[in-house]
Image 1 (tube, rainbow, N blue to C red):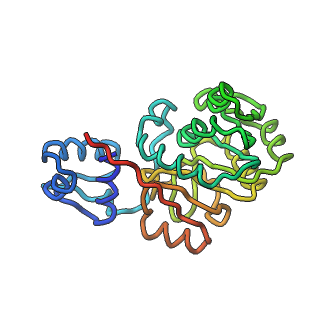
Image 2 (image 1 turned 45 degrees about the horizontal axis):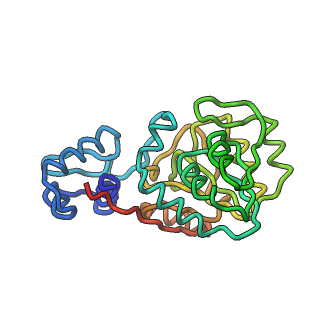
Length: 259
């Protein structure tokens, strides 16, 4: 999406003028002004006379409160689709896959629904319903329903996950900073830990809008994960922390929005 790419350019350069952005995307300055206004409303950038700068010159910020699934799913949709397609390349036949909650994992599930050579374990009711309409082999962990996310959580789900071994776990997060990965919901943290503990390979799926943020609770540091699949290069401080922890950065650039 164009707005996501605008934010990336401002992050990389520290600031960008309206004229330079209009030239970069071959659109009118009025279109760029509208894009910048929306990004400023979201808290991602700060408007200046004739352009924009990254909010607080790139310092870590607190993520906004958790939004409902449908709203989140339609945000940065192209980036999430690209990340899901790249994540598919990490899968081999006959693997046991743990699929966490989250909108990017939901995009991945829509692709996995065509696979009959893997087993998918999830605590996400939306994913189970989506994949349950196909011939894919899907297992749903039990537990208490968290209505806002339509996920199953609590000691029953955690106990079930800790009885299994996964070849790969795909983790959803709400924020990524140089300190690690974060989420909003206390209820789901223990199950994320179980996925991390019981998987041979731990992969975070996160679009670049989540970078340089923290949220309510830290899931783990980067030493607990093996790879990050994202649509754009993270900031220098996140890259430094990822490299120090030996985490592979896998880029999946989104197809630009022509509008």
